[in-house]
Image (cartoon, rainbow, N blue to C red; front, side, top):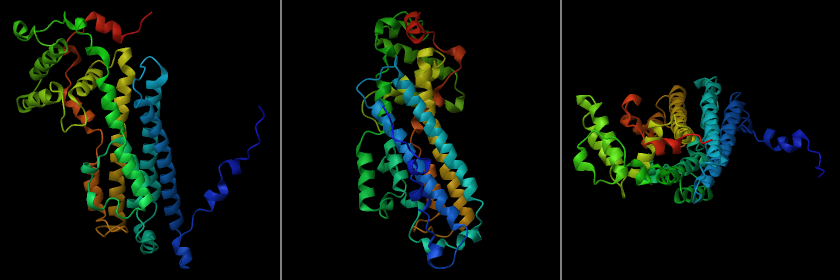
Length: 352
């Protein structure tokens, strides 16, 4: 097949991109030098948001399939694209370094000309949060978080909120992890707690009761309430107000505990990438908040928000994958882990 020649300039549509910067100060013949930097950085942010959507959509599509073949490239592809999202988010955080070469006085040269335009109106960022799993009821500033957006952008965000989010699909994937499905594999598990009274329990429950017993023994006196939290998260199924079900929590903790086995390395990387995404989003929000405080102090934002106070409240509240992070509260030392049955170890390892 013969392909038509493509020129770099035309392929990247540089005429459109390089002619897309129109400073407001120039329209008023005031020519604030740093407004060009302000525009370019925000345009770069929006381009990176577009790429984050591209990656997130592909991950959601794969995770939304009825089954994911863990012995195929599918899980590796998900993990790789989540890792790319983490790297992009790191770039977004570091772009603030460039923005902060602009001083508060430089910003004041054109700030009042921007009203009511504001980063608060970035519909791409709000839609990305929704796709990842930030629910409306968990948002800070619910009453006005879309009121400055165009109707078509509000509709796109609402559509994303109505669809299956990444955290919901991760919950479904974790519930399908198979290592506790075959009860026969667990019948010879050595246990140390009230053995004679526990032989009639469901077999997968035997493992988790044993783990709870060992976990309780590892806690300091001030941490004893964690035993009750453990039971609520790992030993109860059904509808809860948590993003993860009991079955999903058990699978996620199992992955963290035994991540050294080959079969669990990719699942662990997937969960770790979700934590990294939350961490980088938080780093970006806090850097943004500190930059705003440096630039405008306690003044109201150009979009009408309370500026730093709004950004701080949102940064503290908008953690999406916090239920994965809290699982680290329930880890114990490797040497205290219950020994896995041989058949389960075989399932988790390489086969020749």
